[in-house]
Amino acid sequence: MMKAKLETEVSKYMSYVLRHAPEAAGLTLDAEGWVSFDTLEKAVTSKYEVCRADIIEIVENNPKKRFTLVDNRIRANQGHSIDVDLALTPIEPPAALFHGTSRTNWPSIEHQGLQKMQRHHVHLSADVETAKIVAMRRKGEHIILRVDAARMFSEGHSFFVSDNGVWLAESVPVQYLSLDAGTP
Image 1 (cartoon, rainbow, N blue to C red):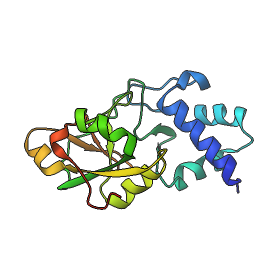
Image 2 (tube, rainbow, N blue to C red):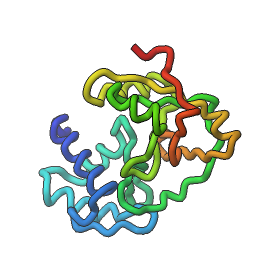
Image 3 (cartoon, rainbow, N blue to C red):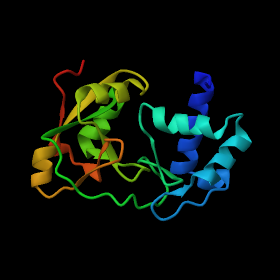
């Protein structure tokens, strides 16, 4: 059993190399972001004192379910800043989705809507509680935004859902956003 601090450090490293900088670990991702698990294992075990079972435990027990491991291939589920095609299929969203963020971001969001920034998509939650967890990881006071996903979808915007249940959109224009009633 790994210590929590080491597990977190290894998980963050895996996220970094699978989402942002595969070259930092000598990895080459395919067009959909996959890499051989054996190759990732070599990169991780050369940097940290962990074994294959430890890495598999991180993948299987990560509360955010950041990774998918299938047939000795692994990839990050979303959040990439590098060019990958996650082969996501558009899907009708629930009526409302939520986004947790810092209150300091609200003036910009109120003006521009939610933008994907350096990532491929805006990340949205299916429930307020998950959005609150995300928001609390941000610095300062947090807010929860409600996305009128039903109206957005009916007006031609696409939504996707990643393997770990995170809802994704290219952007969320301001007219579909409101402060959630539960926001302090």
